[in-house]
Image 1 (cartoon, one colour):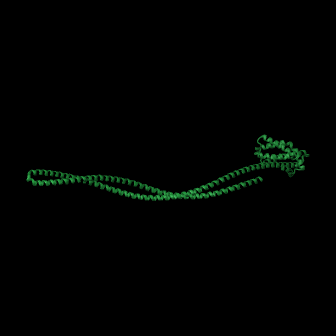
Image 2: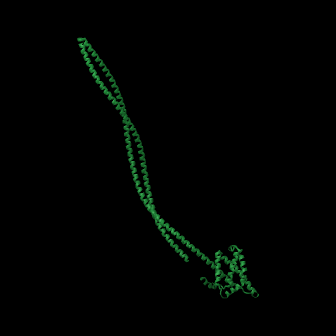
Length: 447
């Protein structure tokens, strides 16, 4: 409707009123019989022009274009600029836009056609005038005005189609852009929420990790202290073991001396037993002598009895000898009993000395075993002491590392809080961006 109201203003702008408008109809009467030839020549020229032939590649397309162009020119010259004509001219511009024909090509083509039409008018006016001196200027003026109007209306259609396409593309682009921004904003908001939740979770975990690190640091300190105490205790144990080793060595040495003394005593007991046996043999000999003496005394008494008084003195001597022999026999018997008792005690002492020697041997064996065990325990204590010292050192290093980790955890906590703040800022900016994009799209559509 707005375009229809513009038509009178257009006609007035191009000076197509009154007599000029009537001449347009007269120009049409001159040109209409020649349109087929003009259009045939024009499209043949297009087919042979580089870049132009790409828009009318077949004869069928060119024939269709000639037909539509002829119908349009008939409206242009004979419809008295009806609404149908304006719609036809605008449609031509829209077709040119649809097939991608540049305005420069269309304008140049109309310039060529205009020259051809002007030639026809000049020839026809001169042919009908007296002596060929008719003035074609009014007709050519009317032709120029109507061709310029036709070009402007067609270009208006071209620009209108272009604007509509641009508006459609812009609208589609705006919708797509709005949808994309909406999706991005939604994704960004969701991501920000997740990131905020993750930051909160990370902050909680960092707090727990900090508590765990503090507890672990305390435990490490206690372990280090305990390890140092163990090392000190091991040192004391090692010193005690060294003292025990010395005592065991002393006991072993004393056992060895006792063994030697026992062996010496055993030898002395054996010598004493041998001497006792020899004394026994002597006593036995004395007993035998006493026995023989007693027998001799008995025989002497018998012989003295036989001698009577002459043998009384001999009998007294024999009696004394007999008495002496009996006392010797009694003393010998007593000595023999004592010697046997000494031999029995000596044998018992020898047995006991053998037992003592065996005990001393076992004590020495036990001392050797204890010494070996103590040596092994000493070596084990040294290893334990070394490991305890190493553990104390490692635990100290671990405590330092835990302290460093705790410090880093605190820094991570600060970073987490900063991240949480940044997430809040980005989330707010995302909302602002979404609002600004919507405002931009509204302004763009309004433009």
